[in-house]
Length: 581
Image 1: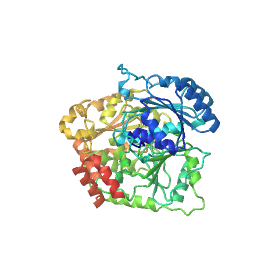
Image 2 (image 1 turned 90 degrees about the vertical axis):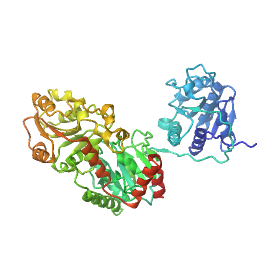
Image 3 (image 1 turned 90 degrees about the horizontal axis):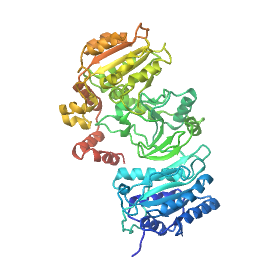
Image 4 (image 1 turned 180 degrees about the horizontal axis):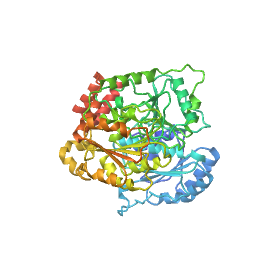
């Protein structure tokens, strides 16, 4: 019977990407554990396969081929101690920066340490043998396939990265005996572009979006470069309160992207250019593009949207200046489309119950020019991202580690840089009490103003789309951590804040909030720092979020909602892809 490619998907992905990255030399050593890989390459005429019984010798042969040809060379060995014999040759490759890829085949790594024959621990490598080591697990579902593609691309790109050098892939096998696959399925190829490389052409059709994660405030040069790029290619800059961009093409998509019953096609980009770091705007995951290009000096493969095809290892200004066309007629129809739909959504927003959403809606325009706003993760970040803030207001959120433990301390740190600049925070009760001790810090200045949204629990867990919501009140016991910190005591924070020298304000209704908010947001300096405690109801908080997310509806969104209700969340994204096509 004719033999072709292995049925093991991780082997298929590795072989397909070796071909895509132009790697053809393979030196195979005998064994059973590497049969699935070796058989797949020896049955593909693209590869030039050589045999070497001695793995030590094979590694040095690879050094010779790599040095002479200038091309990467693959090594393949079985389990047990075979891979140990590569060490001397890989050391040679490391110090000469030769692109040698050691593919060591392995049984299921969970067997390591259990006295299973021929199973050894390859999880750690000596520092001067390989530049990168990865495990390519067996693929059992789409998530693991995505992970395998990313890891394989990362390993193959590392062969030539920063001068090049050896790389290690530990390739799991299940000893599948099916070699009947005649055509090798494709795998997603990711390319790394350096400043001196030839840049790929931008697509001439479709919409282009720039997604900015958490980012330091944009300087004048970068803002001009981004604006010139957008003008040239009719692009839009998507961001949230942490993005730091305030140029001509800014658009915050949270309100539209979070709609349950409205299709995202009018605002969804075909190509997404991804810059910045972590974004806490989960709604962006609803704007899945066809392709993603990531631009960052770190050159790492960061694939939030699972559509990454290029990584540009360079400064952002270099990228945008390269593609900007100085003679092009400025275009902004894509931005205008986004803004028009945004205006429709804002106009359609109902009256909200007293909640963080209501507070944000009635407060964003009260923030003084040039002030600083820090928001807590999740609910506060979400609620305040629905509305546009003054462009002169600097915003931040602790989305890096994404914990609740230092929101207020981070604000205090920011306030110490310029004591004449007003610094505001909006945080929930769990985050506030977690970080309570910082209020007693003797450096806290009178430019600090803290708004505490006290609903007595982690209200995030009550939202209708949160897994904990199905438990109802039972979820309050241990998931939402209700009832701690005085259980919404009207006196606890008041006395604590006042005893530490803060001015204390309080609101339990819309009317009370409107009566104190002008003083809280006053641009005039105060004698003392301020704590404004706002008591809200968790059910009102959840209802407000639901009202925001059901503001708009169309046939496309309704079909997706039907899929969610009937087929479940796992199939909803597939329905959305079908609709877009």
